[in-house]
Image (cartoon, rainbow, N blue to C red; front, side):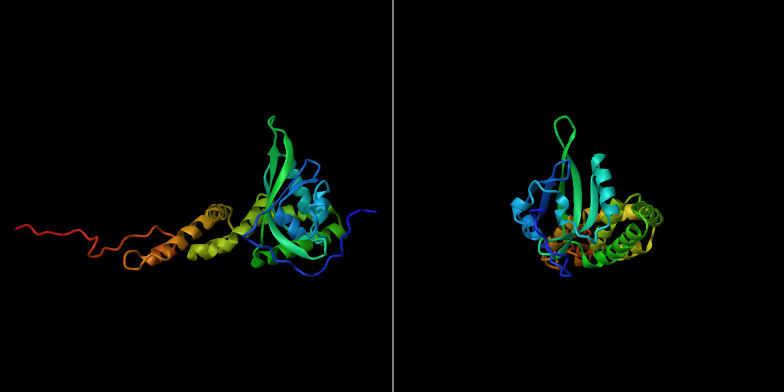
Length: 251
């Protein structure tokens, strides 16, 4: 019998604090070698029950095996990967995270382990993800994992994504689209690889833009055009008596 006891899954979600980092590292066999404080807290396990144990101890049964196969294939090939994951706590409750995985290399450029950094997932993103995962799970149970992989590959191709990681990155980036006004609405309607790439590039810097915009919200309206500021453009000084050049007429 396992020395780690877990309750059966409960339909109770635990919110993830966006202000705290969720970090963990595993060795090449997938066993946890490091878990930061918030990962330990969120998982519901004591740290001693996490370290040295397979990282999939927190895997929720609602997660398709197909997603993790693609993840491990990419990591073992030395590539970074992104995924939206539903984890199960020790008490049976669950939480969703957007996870970024990257391989760690030693001095000889050999993979020595893997690191994962996680963040909360926007609610509107989960609707698409849950529907997709339910379909993959159904295929895995009624047919085979290979069928699920083929279905996912075909869907991603039809939607204009070269792999699952790109699909997840695009889904997650959509939470920043409000910052781009009409451009966000336009990109949302265009199902084209070129525009998806442009939007993804813009959204990578969205958090920086957001901080920049917030910084200038307090600038008085008299000297700066707030419409340009809120639109994410550099503020243009308005001419006032104090900064306008003095125009002198020639006699």
